[in-house]
Image (cartoon, rainbow, N blue to C red; front, side):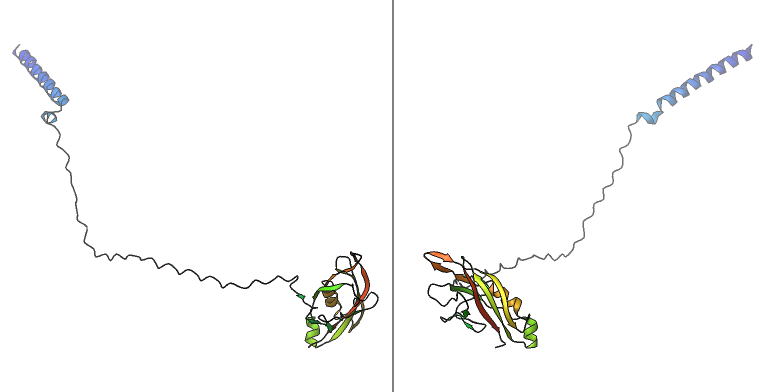
Length: 201
């Protein structure tokens, strides 16, 4: 009987202690009631080392001087062509400044009222002929139309042949005349001839 009572009392005491221990665990113990400590803050402050820095200031270059105005050139009248020549030039043995125009044949230009030369172009000396020292002449037949242009160019004779023909034809095609006027109307003149001399002078 005594043994039963002691067992009951021990069981009750153990049960009570277990309840107290569980309540302690649930509450987190005595330390849980205390507020947490603030976190430790570490400030690292370091002064930058002193440096001797040589600051270089850039100075802008002086502005350039304004350019001098170009000298005024006298105004010259433009030529009718880059290769055009006036009557004072001696072209292939033909004196362009004299009354003799160097033309002959039917409808020659030496009569009064005939066509008057305005622009004549000097023929270019062929480089191959100049290199070889070749001289010669070309005789051509041509027509002056109503506008003063040269048309229908034919090679009559040449010495030497086929050396100066192309340059003579090209130069003659660029000649210009004031056409012959009859009763106030320009006239076409056909069958005119001219000889262009090619010399090394």
